Length: 132
Image (cartoon, rainbow, N blue to C red; front, side, top):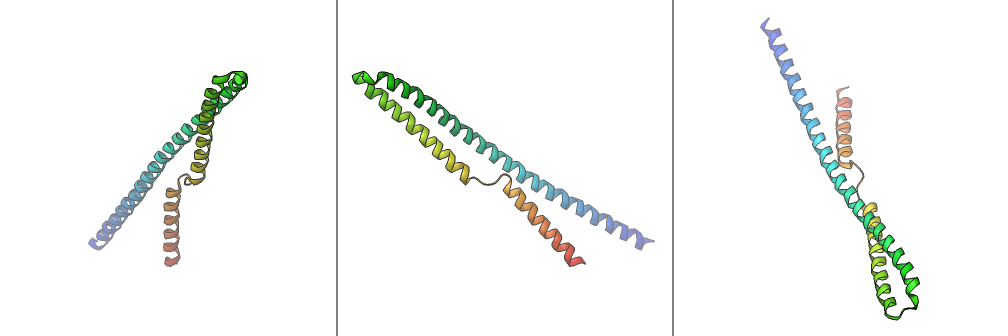
């Protein structure tokens, strides 16, 4: 009888170890997921700022362009308005180019989490193939 109870205790200890391992794996994956979600939040904030700068620059460029056309016949005011137009237009172009470069270079959403899950899947499928 003691042999059966020690086997049950060993099985129970093994099961507890498996549950602990599964909890640790789940905890690690959730930590990676949380980290990636924070990074994506910062990424979306940066995108929103660049887009807002671009939209504001486009708005001011258009308004100053209209003022430039109206004031085309005034001597000194034309130069000032032209300089402001160039500054706002340059800011617009810079923000749009920066936004485009940032959007093409950023990593895929949740790429680290997906890579870790792929590793888990590969290791589990390797265990199943070896056992059979």
